Image (cartoon, rainbow, N blue to C red; front, top):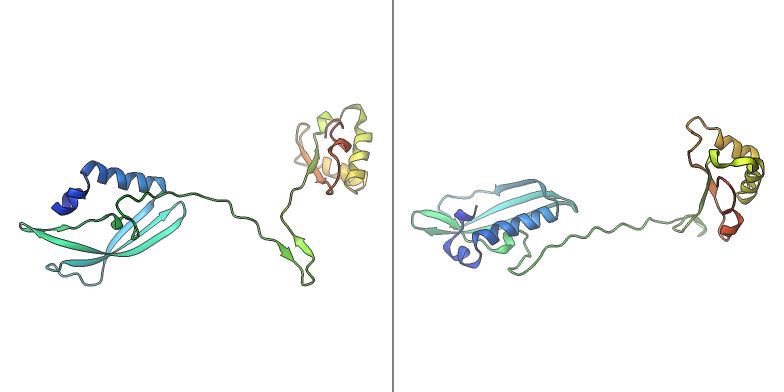
Length: 189
């Protein structure tokens, strides 16, 4: 593409820099499915024409319409390229950086303001069956008390079909304020 640039455009950027700029930016934002097409009627002897750029990036789909200025040099038309061909707001010394941030999960409240689903931290208690040892009955009883459930409910979770002796079997979520000392020393937990 560099060969199609006007002499004026070539004075502002070398072929190496031109190529590297496009490669670094497009690789950096994960460009895929790049499509460029002309827009409207572009006469062969006009100095301006519109084109549309569409691409998928790691940050979503990007599309824009841009106007290209052509310059007649000798017997052919050349593109008077500027950095805003890459992205419309781009200037010569601009850099493109993409940063992906994890979105915060929403919270749900009922009409009275009572929280139905909120953000917070939770501690999940689970048992590894093969590590229960000789105190299995006592451990299951303590876990059941900590989680406000019956020993039968604990046993039911431990006998699910998918469980292997070395599986971590989630039993329940601890209530806020439960001390780690209440369960951390239990065998298999």
